[in-house]
Length: 112
Image 1 (cartoon, helix red, strand yellow):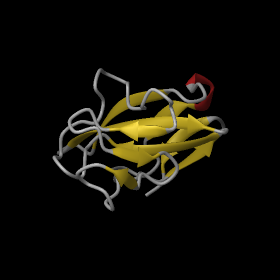
Image 2: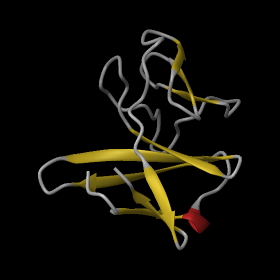
Image 3: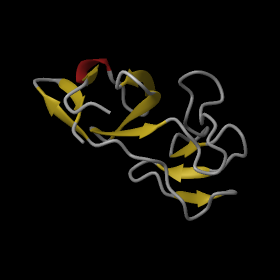
Image 4: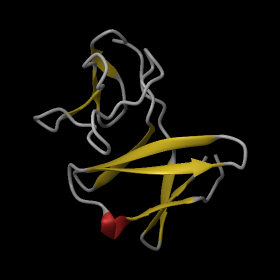
């Protein structure tokens, strides 16, 4: 991933909603998703640590019905939003791959 690569404008994020973006380093492409919760945002790779498949059950839908966990579409594993740690399901004890980001003048950018 490319440091300082633009992902989103903060003004485009809505509390407890998810957005996806595809990024590329020129060789590899990845899909990331961002969740804004309690005025903080969390960015993860869209990949289940158990199967490697995408987490969203329809494009952009990553949260369970209560909107308090990220839910895998394949086997319903639940992950904490704030750190990506799996609390139940086939990959309990594992975690999503988090992407470090920073905000610069309202722009959310990769900060690896």
